[in-house]
Image (tube, rainbow, N blue to C red):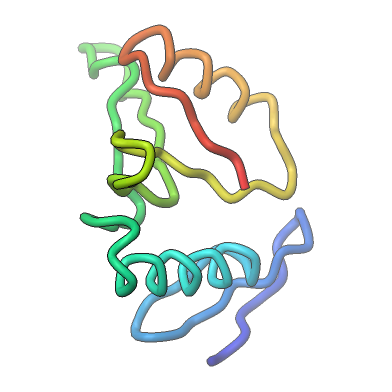
Amino acid sequence: MRWLKESKYHNKKVRADGMTFDSTKEYSRWCELKLMERAGEIVGLKRQLRIELVPKTKLYRAVTYVADFVYFDKRAGKTVYEDVKGMKTEVYKIKKKLLYWRHGIEIKET
């Protein structure tokens, strides 16, 4: 595991298993979810899934939300979109509302 430069929110990026994680908290959650997947509690675990909120136009780029993790929870019987949060920025709050309004997706915050 190698530590990278500190960000303005004081999270430390972590490089492990050939991937880069935005924080130690996100990496820890990834490890938990991998164990849950091996135990058969969840399936289809994905990282950094990009979801379009506002399409691209001639004048503006598309607005997207990137979910930290997406997986199917067998117990709950539904797909879970999860975001590891330390600091909830205003941009995040707006994108979370747009995601629910546009796609009906609720974010699980850990």
